[in-house]
Image (cartoon, rainbow over all chains, first blue to last red):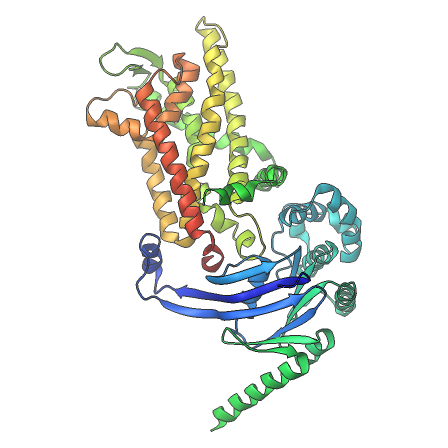
Length: 250
Length: 281
């Protein structure tokens, strides 16, 4: 592994066990289930991402994109293989996760900061940036339960992008607020990329991947089909889709 | 294997404390009398039990306590006082067992959405319950002082200091228990229901309303095996019996063996299930 590698997957596999019913689940607490139904979400996935690279992850629903991202963010764990992630990971996936509705926006900044393992002094430093970016005004000292869903997303987004992550994981499906705020978010993501942060970008749409990432990984049924220049990856992806369509027509 | 829970806690102490505080605020914020609810519910429960047994059934005005087993003479103690000192640790134990086993499910966002040292969830929610316990304890201790003075005794005793032995031990014991029960409840809702339905029965099987020392034969051993009795009797040792925790050695040894067993089992179960938690929640 070269020294500027920031993320490395080596033969990573992950299998979900599908329990028949609640009894089977209860039984599995004490006895290992015999020949359970399984779903292989990732199958011997290997790749390396260098510091400062922006990589797109493409593939159909159920291809294993979410599982892959969850592993990078440290939420899920592989059954086999090794994962190495070096540095602070911020995820623009579940922006409102970890908010405490009874606490004020400001208190939630600290709470989220603690969850991310940040020090008090550091949070104090970035607090004003976050509040300014989220455009919450006086609402920052109101309980989060009084926020609209857009406000919550804005606060979540503002916290995640202002903690100066080493790796930023972005899901394209992310929709934050109105058009002008959306633009602000896009600009901010671009700034972060330009500042040399490693970005993983998950998407269904070709243009936005091309725009942001020079390299893309194409996943199909848990296996890496292609890893290389985005244009070629999209080509392989589209060819496969066309072939599928043609098959259906027959 | 032993280090995973320890590793998750290392360097997270301050956060745990703040999250525990947050947990308390979350529970009681928005209510007019706020934290007093933490007292109202147990106070009402104590009143109901006292009313049912002392006023209603009339049989229990006092309890005969057999400190050294049945072969020695019993002494009599006021039922309300006896029950009150035993039920205060029970309130903590009950909350810790029931809520503790539900905690991972109710805090699933910390497991499935963000990276988080999962075992600390059990610690900070447990701590917030301990705060409530300390609050109740202060009220109980005030009552004990009143009780002693009104009976012509000295208001405080060196034996009271045993609180600092029993209370942290109680916290740790039931925390270690939740290392097993919480991941298992998260994995299977049936397991959670099992615990909840068993708990109300456990109350009557433990020496909260009666003296667990007052048995002979197999029942005596059954009572000694119940760790809840260790704490109910422990609080009574400290505040009513003027007896050290080291005096009844059989009870102490059985408890310590259980403590080690539960801790090892907890570490084993937590490690076994930790990595599957994000998949099942």
